[in-house]
Length: 136
Image 1 (tube, rainbow, N blue to C red):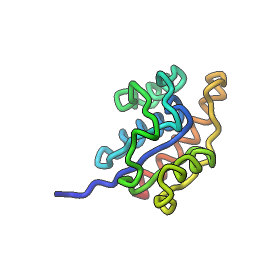
Image 2: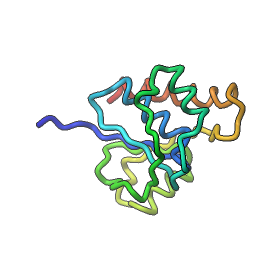
Image 3: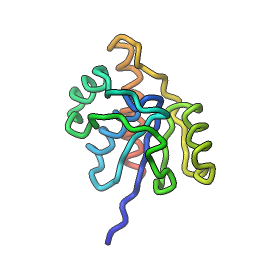
């Protein structure tokens, strides 16, 4: 059996940043196990995210329902990407033994922004995911 690298993206509500990163990496690297979660689970993946994912041809990879971090066994992931330092803190509170697996991308939350400004943050995610896809 071939081992598949496991990546988890984490943001606040699993409604914007982490599900987009999840979908983009799944599109680029179908050979990797990718998932996402929020420090709490919002009730939906927001329209801004769906619109951007569709524009990037990644809509089919976008999750439909957000997940909370507490529902994940964090230790099974090889890499955990936190969008902000507060998400890193939440990850480490839940699983301090995973500190060496966590990286922080410092992506601002586009949730309340107009689409043009939100797209700027999404573009940062797209760029970081593309780099990550090449490095894994």
